[in-house]
Image (cartoon, rainbow, N blue to C red; front, top):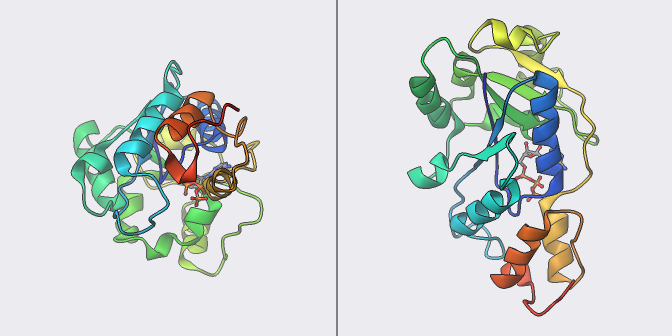
Amino acid sequence: MHIVYGGTFDPVHNGHLRMALEVSDRLGVERVSLMPCHIPPHRDGTGATSEQRLRMLELAVDGEAQLRVDARELRRGGASYTADTLRQLRDELGADTPLAMVVGTDAFAGFDRWREWQVIPELAHIVVVRRSGHRVDPDGQPGRLLSERGAREPRELFERPCGAVLELDLPLLDISATAIRARIAEGRSPRYLLPDAVWREIRQQRLYGACPDRNF
Ligand code: ATP
């Protein structure tokens, strides 16, 4: 099974990395691909560029066999629509290989606002990782998708190429990129929330208002 986990990763942090490893372990797959999305440069002046986010991801997964980076959305440029990405992956994998995308409950709760969201279950399975403080409205479209397509066991995802929605309860770290950016901007250390190599890169590139001379 091929698993992709998309996000802005601005910056990637240990919450993302642990979650990807937990998914890989729970589903018994060899690896998970972290897939950074393209962000229009005018969206948020304080964030990192696509190239910088990609570089941080590469540093974060270096030497970790269970994780890899898939930069296709950055290479494609323009807006990153998940349906387009999954269509491209489906073409590469062929019709029969199971393909799954991982999202947190916060992302899945707004799933029906994604472009061509109805097509997505025809291309891939959806693995929804439950995050505390976020819920999916059972009467909304994402909630309905969950009740109509809900898988009971991870095993079901291996039995067909797409179409199932699997909710997983995993031990998660309560870390967010927003909090890390705020911490750095205030001159406080984000260490142990993200890999040291990523923090080093943030300082070297002076991202998020970081000062290169800080030696913590
Ligand atoms: P931001 O704070 O900038 O919104 P973020 O930390 O939430 O960033 P994103 O790149 O927006 O990270 O998230 C990508 C995906 O990772 C989403 O599906 C989100 O639910 C999930 N995610 C984010 N943080 C965690 C975490 N600590 N544990 C597990 N999943 C997470």
